[in-house]
Amino acid sequence: MEKHNSNRISTIILFVLSLPLFILYFFFFLDVFTVPSTDSIWPESFTLVHWRFLTETLSGKPSIWITTLNTLIFSGCVVAIVLVLSSTAGYALSRLKMPYRSQLLGTLLLLHSFPSVSLLIAIFIILQMIGLYDSLVGVIIIKASLELPFGIWIMKGFYDTVPWEIEMSGVQDGASRFTVWYKLILPQIYPGLAALSIFSFISSWGEYVLPFVLAPSAEQQTLSVYLAGLLSETTAVDYGLLKAVGLFYMLPVMIFYIFTHEKLMNIYGGGGGSKG
Image (tube, rainbow, N blue to C red):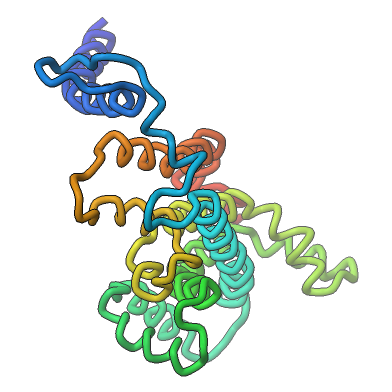
């Protein structure tokens, strides 16, 4: 009985603390589909005028669909690169005996601590030298490189939980090291792969600084840059349009999270095998 009352009190407190956030999001969604009133907090009428960016190209802006495609390509390629390189490098650091392995792991952690803003000048110069400045390919390479230290650490942790016996049984049966890794080890660390893909996708989808600085042309623009550009208009800001684009920008991540949040929770539940 006492535990039941404690849970009820905790639920009430959580609801009260979350109420301002719910109200904020309610009016956000309301403003996207309505005309605001000048003398009331309640809107005047329903409208879809704020969604005109879906069917027409706004003045001085690229097509929203080209921008969305750029963002999907950018995020998808970063996720693919990070998954492939992190899953292989994490396996090597977990399983293979190599000199200075602990120093290498420490260096990876140090590299991940560097904010990307502090590296922008060096990155800018390098991309100009290799001809990838103002190119989506260049931004993809840089973003994936910055995500790799974190990805390798995540994957190494999951590989460490897989018992050696699983791997040795495959080797004793005559399978190659690659076959053992692909068919026996990877299925054991699937929660780690899923969690890393979610982290990488959300991070890439929300990236603003790198595309803005390293791919400034309209043809290479991503949704984060498109959205920020609406705030820099010389005329009055159309907040209804701004919120509609913001909602359009959030929808893929919201949908992605709804379908994958259970996989994300596995990273805290110690997914994978356990050493015996």
